[in-house]
Amino acid sequence: MDRENDSKPRARPSLTAQAAADLAARRAREAVALRANLRRRKEQARGREQQRPEPDPEGSPANGDAPK
Image (cartoon, rainbow, N blue to C red; front, top):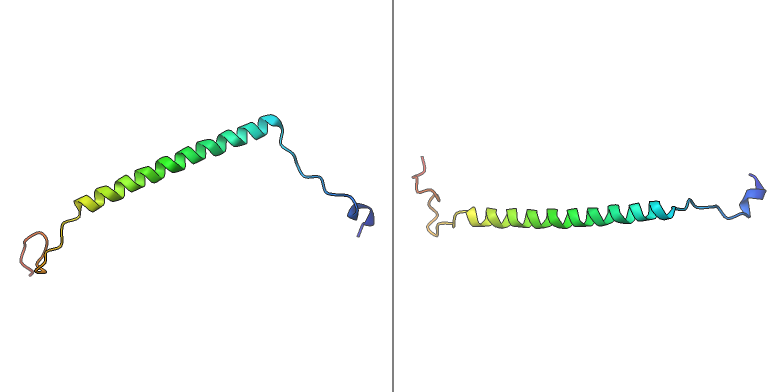
């Protein structure tokens, strides 16, 4: 191994101010999109719950047809 490199700290890549601003803007857009997607999915789930027929307490089919 090269002992000369062991004592030197490794330089991490750094972002320019523009790149950091672009990254922050992208993360903000993603956060907005994720919140909108979650809101849309919750609305869809509520809609499915409202469309679901109430279970018949007597156990007969929900649409009123007799079993075949």
